[in-house]
Length: 273
Ligand code: NDP
View 1 (cartoon, rainbow, N blue to C red):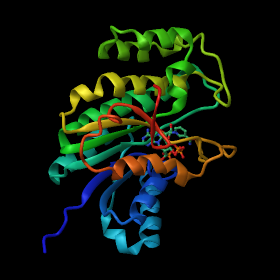
View 2: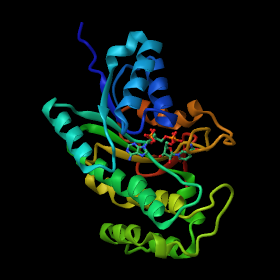
View 3: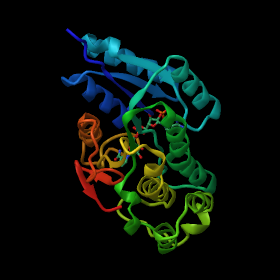
View 4: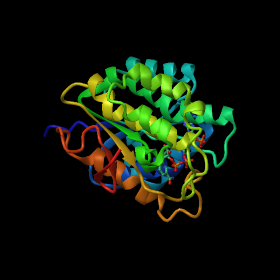
């Protein structure tokens, strides 16, 4: 009997939080995947791998670990070289790693935009050549990145019909100046986290699809407000709930879903960018 080829998933920031819960959920279900779990801290990543392998010994050979700090060029290069050398084709790239501060100075604002926007774009584009013909890119974003949540200056800049990719990066580089009129809402007290996700949403909506083949697709995902180091203890959702839409999109048949492609998805449904 012909063996079914397992699809390969690569996920960032999976030593804890939603990324870890995503791997755990994917391993628990009937669809078999091979998964490359990555983390910036090798010790934490290997520990996560070991815990998952002990919990699910039947799928322990499906898991591989590779170090990846998305902000570190050398680390990204090491991963790309390893993928190339091992002839790997990625079926699902899940860019999950992200950071948020509750209040920020300018350096932290820049680091937030770097981690949640520039490094996601960079890794996505470095890995597109290794994406399978019908591969998917899942960019973990947030509802707080919706245009309606941004200050007027950033909202106008990102909704400009003549927005180019170059202009998007220029906006990202000037995020401190462009978010002066941001107004805190709910638990979001600082501007750079929502701005970083708004930039990522604009990338998924306008530019990422142009870099993919017609048979490949990309999604931005709002995982829900869930309890994690980033989401905080007062968040209503669990990590498993946070993994749900990511797992759902991963499991969808590898055919084009025009109603979901290049959209922002929460609770398995399209929501406004
Ligand atoms: P956690 O803080 O629990 O996990 C974040 C993960 O990202 C950790 O593994 C962290 O590694 C990793 N990470 C941070 N910086 C880097 C880096 N430079 N390179 C590689 N990995 C890095 O957060 P969540 O699980 O809650 O968040 C996951 C994603 O979901 C994020 O993109 C977040 O913005 C998004 N999200 C979360 C929501 C929530 O309510 N929790 C709501 C909406 C969106 P380390 O352990 O080393 O710090």
